[in-house]
Structures are given as C-alpha cells and as structure tokens.
Image 1: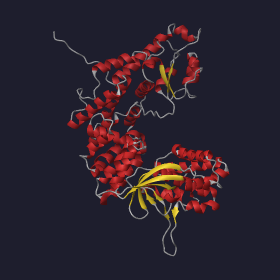
Image 2: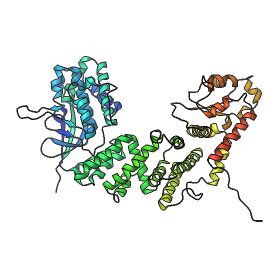
Image 3: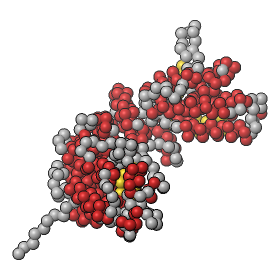
Image 4: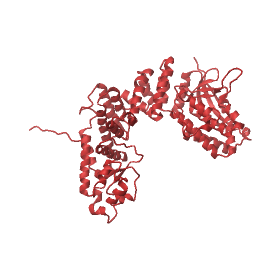
Length: 565
C-alpha cells in the first residue's frame, strides 16, 4: 500500500499551534544541545534581524523568511505527532520562547505562552496541554522549569537536575537569559514576532513509522548529528513486543543516564568488539545489523546492554565501587590513564564471565596495555591483539598461561628494556612517559595513591639547559648524557616553572619539588628530595632501581634458555 507523505513549509506560529501536539517517543535520544548550538540558533536569528533591519513595527513588511530546517513526524489524523527528527530544534525554540515570555512580562507573555501551551476549557473540563512533551524521564522537569509561566525566572545554576538532558535544558535557559540581558531592549521585543511569523520549518509527516524512519535515515546520512546508540535504539526497541516496549525503554534509559551520553555511546563500540571479536568496519549500520540479526532486542538489552553497562561504569568510576579493594583501585587508576580505551572490552568480558582472580587479570592486562603504549603499538596492532584475547577467553584458554595472547612477547620485553635505558623524556610520548612514572610511583607506594590531580607534569632534576658556571656543570660536565634518562625524571602537581627548573639542586628541591611539609605528592619525587646531592652516581643508582622495579612488576626478565651439551 502506498504511504502518504506530506511536506510543507510552515511558519512557527502554525508549528506551535493547535495543529500539532508534539511527543518525543521513548525510543528517541535525549535532548543534548549545548549552549554552543543554542547560541548559534540565537546568533542566526539576531543576524537575520540586523541584516533586514527588522523592528517590531516593520515585521509585517519583511517578505524574506528565515528557514530553520526540517522536522520528521509520524502523524495521523488529529494534532498528535511523534517527533522522529527535530527534537533538538523544537525543544530549544520552546526554551527560547519561554525565556522571552518570562523576560518580557505581561504585554507579551500571553501571546508567547499560546505557542507553548494549548488552552483547555473550564466549562468543558479540558486541561491545558503543553505543545511539546519530552521523554518521560525529562518531561516533568521541562514542564516545571521551562513551560510553566514564570518558571525560567526561578532557574539558577544550582537548580537540581537528574540527567544530562535536564542539565542542558537548564543551562540553555540560563544562557538565553544572559544573552537577552546584553541585547538592546527593542531587539528583545522584536524577537518573538520574528520567531512566530518569519521563521519557517519544513514539516515532513507520514502516518507510517517505517516510512518516517526511512526519511530519518536519509537525513542522517546527509549529516544529522546522531550517535551510534541513537541510530539503533529504534531498531532494538522496535524488535520487542509492543506491550514490553515501555519496560525495555526504561531499562535502556537507566543505563544511558548512569553512564552519561558520551560514555553510553562508547559502550556500543566496546560491546560490538566483545560480540564480534574483531576490528570494526567503517559501516556501523552493517555491523549492528549483523549483530541484531542474531540477537533479539530484549536479549540485547538484558544480556549485553545492562550487564556490560554496569561493568563499564565500574571500570571508569572505580573509586565509587571498589573502595575496599585498594590494589584494584590502583590498577584501574593506571589503566584509565592509558592513551586509548582498547583494553576495556577484554576487561569487561572477563569481569562478566569470571568472579575469581579479577585483580590478577587486570594486572596482566595493565602490563600489556602499558608496554604497548610505551612501544607505540598502533591501532591495528591493538585491535588484532585484543581480538585474539577475546577469542581465547571465549574458547576457555587459560589467560594466566605464558602462551596466552595476554602475555608480552620476549621481543617486546627486550625492546621495552632498551627504551627504559634510553632517553625516556624525548623518546616517549607525553602520555606514555607520564604513565611510566605514575606506574613507578605506584610501585613505591605501599598504600593507595590517588592520581586525580588536575595537573601532573614530568620534570627534570638535572635541568635540560644548566646555566654556565652553575653547580650542575661541576657534577655533570656532559649533561646531555644524563638529562633525559628515567633516573633524572620526577613528577609534579603543578605547571612547569621556567625559572625554577634551572635552580641548583638544593634550592630546586626546596622551593620547587617539595611542599611546605618537606615532601611531595609523589613517592617518586620524595625520594629525590631526600637525596643530599645529585651526581651521576646517584642518578645511575636511581635509574637501575627504577628499571628493576618495572622489570619485576611487568615480568620483563628474559626467559632463561638452556643448550644441549
């Protein structure tokens, strides 16, 4: 049967009229526009007003409309319409209208409010209905904080929110209010009329959800800002019987809210890796269509999304979940400083299927992830190795065997040792050398170190460019031989100080390396502070001690070999 498709350029006073009552389906992504997108919308409107010299008095004379793009609806007879695409735009416009309504007051409030709420009838016992209803999780907040008359004047930065969407709604309303305070009062009074009469949206509607989704997909291919999780939510929920869809939508959104939008989207990449156990392709749709062809929507949510979402949250918010397991926190704090997150799928898989030796597994995983970062292993290498680890776990291979893919090869061990003995400061990337020193610091610390400082820098003890006739050159006539070695490096929780880094040793450790109590935030640096002098012999002894620590922690010792007589 042929599907009816309706498309029409519509002024906003008709979009926000009794012709439409918009609902955001539960399968939709949450509201996510930030003040950047909201600001662009307002700037475009203000540029339009300035370009055409629009005022309150001449709005009716302006013939050039301003187009705000399109929205895609599932709409049958009557005003009720499900918004498949356009939620961000409709929500942001409603926020702007509500702020204008409350800002301008009585002379404008009634007319603007008519674009926000459909009036009921006392004599017919019909309640007022807001023209836009957000997802269940955010709809009450939107009503109380935005849609009710006067609500935006009560908002402040401390207004409590429960989701990322509510935070975006609150922040955008406060942003609009701040911007209106900066504008000429005549411009502010001109804005509502421009929005209502000169702004147009192309409304595309069809009574059939599948048809609307096809339109939505085409628009997405042409650049709509969607995430992987957004594209497949409708597919997953749509696969579930209708009487269970609300229940599973709530489950989906619980995971989404707990992780936050960006992490929730990354969760899908980690789950794809776990399910397919291979490097992903550039075509996300084909990848996930392949997955969903064998896994039902309800099973995907129950057996993958929920358990792996919970594990992922534990891996990244480890301090909240493992407060009684300091060694586990130490390992996870280090893993989360790896310059990639490719280690996460194997960690998630092991924690999902094994209750024992989790700490031991993560320790071995940290060795592989840390050494591969130092060796600058590329993305393809990592995908190949971690895929192999996942396949071995799936087959029941002993992951603590020297033969497992989790083991660092003898060749790589020797290369790591060579790099540790080289010029670490210049040979390693910033993230790798900082990680290396934090790893060493964790080995020197008996308790649980917390590495959540806003700034952590790597500094030289012997400076890179000691001043002529300084004490440094009396001990180090050839400083370039020592300056970038591991033994000459420390960690600081402050930005580098160009002047202090060239101080002589006694002054440098007293005024730059240590705090008022004579120690540092790092055991690695405190060791240096406790030295009476800094000489080649001291540096070499420290170098050997640090490398031996890593050799033992990362099992970098070469395997002994025997030859036949």
